[in-house]
Length: 124
Image (tube, rainbow, N blue to C red):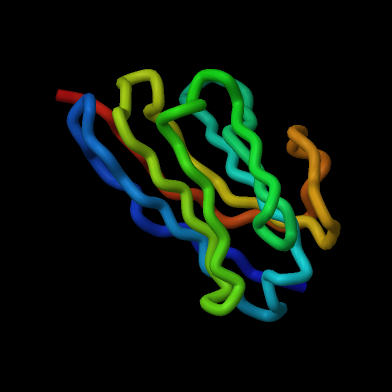
């Protein structure tokens, strides 16, 4: 079992930045591939990006490419989502997820463990 706790959400103006963190406890994150997802009100949870177990492979959904960056610090047992040039359409609850594999997929069902989520609101 691994427990995931997201932090770093909040209210930010369009064009601003936030860095979300996902801290793990219970097991070392160096055995897990990680993903970030988000869910806006009334919409389904959508894939944002993923990172491989060793941090060498990263991919993103098209809408965040060039603006968001995922990184993984296995020594700190934490995964980060750096979000720059934020837009109102990025407003959502953001979740991190984990699967004990080398590189997980882009679907929610690909992941076994989830955090509770952190709210990101982009508004002027």
